[in-house]
Length: 96
Image (cartoon, rainbow, N blue to C red):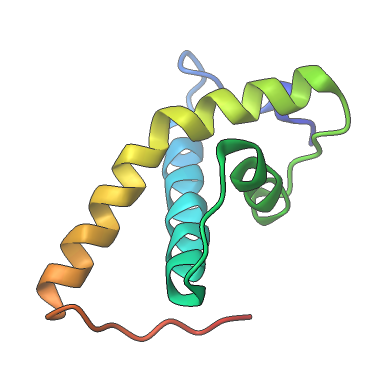
């Protein structure tokens, strides 16, 4: 599916899709932290798209997904912060 065809706020599957995007962003951010690296929004978007099964072949597709990634990244960062606090700063992450 193309990113421009993904559910939007008015779609019945929006909450489920948004949760998947948040989970994918969280996973990528956690991997990057474990590797001691970081990604800008463009790189993060490129990493998240295949995890969601989305094609970002056109500038419009990329722009749509990047806007969503920008919107949910603070939620993902907060989830990682909470996990670190709950785990005393240590948690296992399997890199694929």
